[in-house]
Image 1 (cartoon, protein in one colour):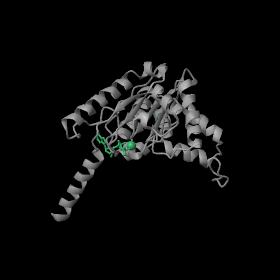
Image 2 (image 1 turned 90 degrees about the vertical axis):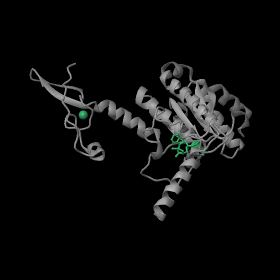
Image 3 (image 1 turned 120 degrees about the vertical axis):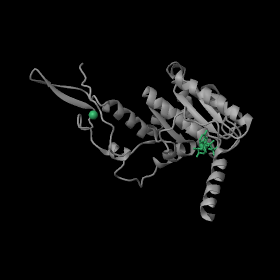
Image 4 (image 1 turned 45 degrees about the vertical axis):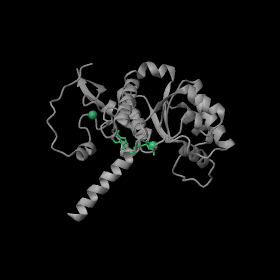
Length: 271
Ligand SMILES: Nc1ncnc2c1ncn2[C@@H]1O[C@H](COP(=O)(O)OP(=O)(O)OP(=O)(O)O)[C@@H](O)[C@H]1O
Ligand SMILES: [Mg+2]
Ligand SMILES: [Zn+2]
C-alpha cells in the first residue's frame, strides 16, 4: 500500500487552531481516497488521522481529569519531594510504574494491577495512576477507564432513577456493571473512602470478582493499606490477589504546591 509523504511546514497556527482545523486529506474520517488506473481506492490517511482518532476516542472514553490530561509516567517529577527518604521512595515508585508500562504486553496476560497507597494525602497517587492510563492508551491503544469507588456506586444508583434525561441512552444496572467489569484497564481512584454496607460490598464483590476471573487489570489508589480497607474480607483478599501494593512517599506535594502558590500570590499582592 503506497502512502504519500507530505513535507509539512511548521504550523503558524496556535495549537488550539491546529486542533480545530479539519484534515485536508481525509476530512477527519481517517481514510483518504485516491485514483489509480481510473479506479478509486481508499487508504489510511497519511497524516496519521486514523490512529489519532482511535487514540482520541479512547482518551475521551477514559474520563481523564482535565488537570491530568496528557501527563505521562516519565513526566512524574521526583525532585519536588523535599526529603531524601521521600525522594528516594518517589524514584522507586516511578521506576516500578515505568517498568509496568514497558512490560505491559506481558503483564496484561496475567491481569496483575497495582495498588498505589499512602497515608498522606496529596502524595501523587492519582497523578501517577492517571499517567499510567494515558501511557497505556497512547503506547498500546488499549482502552482504560478512570473512576472512583464513589462514582461507581453513584452511577449504579442513577440507573434506578426513573427521572432521567431523555437525550441520554438508558443504561440498566446490569449493563453498567458489565461495562465496568469488561473494560481492559480500570483505574479505581480513592478506594476506601466509601461508606461500607452489605449493598456496597455486594456491588464491589461482583465487579472485582469478575475482573479477577477474567484477568482484567485494575489499578487502585487509596489512603489505606489493603488490609485496613473497611470492606468485606472476600473483597480485600481479591484486591490483594489482583494488585501489587506500592507505597507512595508520605509527603504531600499538594500542600507544598499550595504553599508555593500562596507565597507567589502574596509576593504579587505586596510588590
Ligand atoms: N510527582 C509529582 N510531580 C508533579 N506534581 C505532582 C506530583 N505528585 C503530585 N503532584 C501534584 O500534587 C497534587 C496532588 O496530587 P494527587 O492528586 O495525585 O495526590 P493523591 O496522592 O492522589 O492525593 P489524595 O490522597 O488526596 O487522593 C496534584 O495537583 C498533582 O498534580
Ligand atoms: Mg487521589
Ligand atoms: Zn487525515
